[in-house]
Image (cartoon, rainbow, N blue to C red):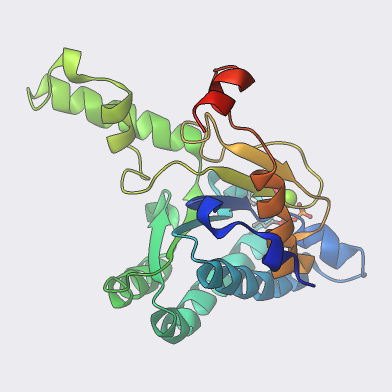
Length: 249
Ligand code: IPE
Ligand code: IPE
Ligand code: MG
């Protein structure tokens, strides 16, 4: 029996975020180059995007490249960029077939010009889709995003577009690159590391965290179902007591 059958569809998280980690070690453990791991990681992306769409998840954010990843050896950065652009380009027909809309968050102006234009084409070509929203975090870091939001709010305040007393948590969220998306209820990190690595820091204030030792190239739909089942077994209290949560059920 697939773990899928045990998932309560009415209690699905609306937004799942994944830190896809462990490609390099997965490859090195087999005596292969790190890029071999990234290549196999693409297969996991396909499988998980398909799995999330089949379940009816509305938002899936995948952390594919952090701002800090620019500091990796040049050959790995170049290889990863080529793979990312190539994959996104090739996947557009299947995104359209499955009604999946692509979004990108991050400092994409740091990416090579051809990569930026391929991304823009893929975003525009899938803009009419109404099913799963697939959000790729590319050249993304949360501190970068928060500082950018603060700068824009400061500029809008100085120019009189907004008043100081209008600045609250809702307005702040509207200045983040995730303004159009709800906060993730579930965040998964593969490969056995227990950290957030600068991902969605503001948005994950009350996100349930799920860590698995499975390396990203080995992560498949069944692993996703397992994470969702774990999520569904938890009590989300948002600062209240367990008794209060039970009363309001
Ligand atoms: C995740 O795998 C992919 C990226 C960060 C681009 P890693 O490349 O970080 O793999 P490990 O963590 O070194 O095994
Ligand atoms: C986080 O993985 C970034 C992505 C998965 C894209 P890293 O491998 O870069 O994170 P650290 O360096 O181990 O924290
Ligand atoms: Mg890593």
